[in-house]
Length: 287
Image (tube, rainbow, N blue to C red):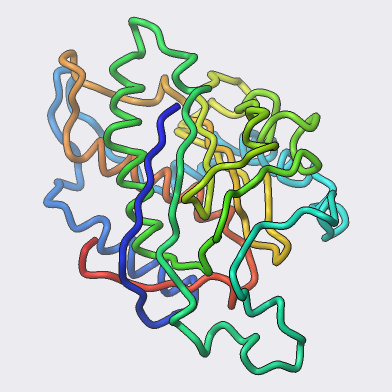
């Protein structure tokens, strides 16, 4: 298991999520990278926009498949959690207060928020490791995932979880898998004991599935658990290893790193759909 936890100790003024995403994404792309391409041992790497990689016509069936996965759980069909007794522990969460209590309005009390702590669980990705793709997996785990988590931790703050996040099997595919059976099987201990020091758990896999890895698709992402207030607390990311381009020595250019980070941020941003006052978005000069 690879556990990458980022906790950034500052909370800034809340902004609409769309404003945060555009502003933070612009800062994320400030690396001095040529837009037209960069040299590598394989030739010239041609950059492609995030929008093209996510929404190009060659990826239409992948979008249909991941939409079907997202609409499969009980919550997606009814708007209610599959297990009404599932609770994520918080200390004095304002939503625990009566509806007419003014302290219930989170947007008026920024002191409640802390930068989102993201934990990656990469056992499924590591299980795909071979001599041919080991460098790609190392690249994802050492560069792409940490930078993506840093982006979200700097861009979003939440009311922090005060104990362990336990996974509710009622929202899992077949009560076992986060999102889909081709993604990660959730360990039993994540259901019984949970994971500490986390506000969001992301299960990362690398299944070369024709359902999710074709065209120019680099990765897909979907939420698979929510708290009692409808905030995503766990999700799956499946990375298409064949789309990763590295040099023969296992390194790559800044452009390739940046594009992989941008794509991963893009696919996960699509799935953060939650109540507007449950997540505080902010910008930071540390990006």
